[in-house]
Image (cartoon, rainbow, N blue to C red; front, side, top):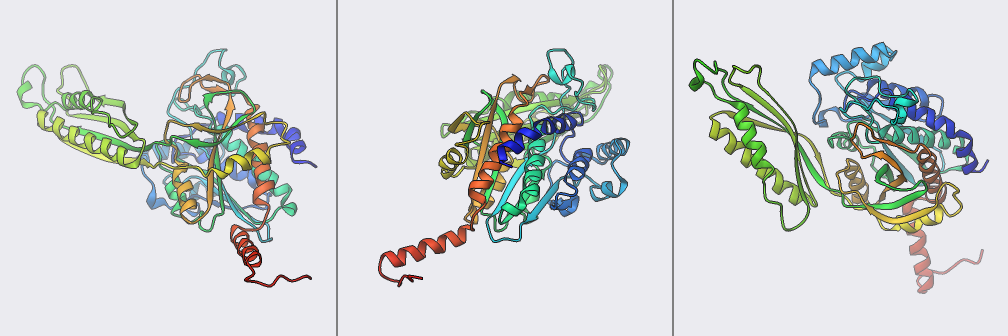
Length: 458
């Protein structure tokens, strides 16, 4: 069966998987149900599955929720029917799955990454929002798949099933990373640290949407990855009666307010793009109480790692100054960190050639800017540092609303576009001899051409 016919025959299955994951959006390090569903759907495929602490380096995690939140998510997972034995493998928030299949035939080692986490966003509940209208909206209050990771997970599973069903026609090794905690730039480094990228020849990943585009449009490469630092900042002061003894209090909210105003006023850098955002601020317990605590969540971004460092250094300076002005203490903790990345240009011609007969693909765009941070940058860079080649694609789709919005949604036909694209690349470029072997063939040809080696006529 031709690969595209296989995609056509399984389109409804991809959509069903997407909707199943959409109903259970779990934020980073709490993806217990999601991980269990991935494992369930990969059983019997021939992939060797690694779960929890076997899949990630737990000590490398950042931004792990507190024990109360983890326990609540574990309890919810039990209610959703996740087996206790599987939950034990994910205790303390060691989520995620790595699936590896060795065809037993010499060939390239290809790593594909699919992110699986949701966002702390309350999903829209109106009939203009397809998930609500079709009754597959979030079942977890305050959480939502508002960035397309439900679709990425479904695409990853589909690619795994294709490899499984066609492994006799393929060569080399395939490693599929179902990565937790992409949001907040926290999960990729834990998989890299576990060694899954060692010896990788190719790395592939991508994203649904980003820009409002037509179905069938694909960007072969992506530019504009921003380095980022995610931080939690806490100001600690002293509570007091606001009417009777205000002078004895130390107002943490005042410090936090000063910090927000001045942090957002940090001068942008002339060397390139810089960003800062303060996403949450929580403080106070009553109208007549001097607030003794204020907690903020924020992030910096930069066009380069150096520019992001500049922004975060300024954040720390402003936090210290704000604390001094209000005579309170400040504590800042880095809970996520992402780096810049580049795609290898060779993927433009490769994708164009690979998808030439692909009925799901209309237009190959050489490159599009992402204008944001992406945790895959860590994985891409690791592969490239060892001589491998990497790209991050963008799969076009009309968007009902922007990413990280309560009404975010996409055209589900993009799932088949993504699956067919990965399959074509696997068939054209990964289903061949290793990069090392190619190098030796090239050297062999060079020596013959230059009279350094006698060519056999056999």
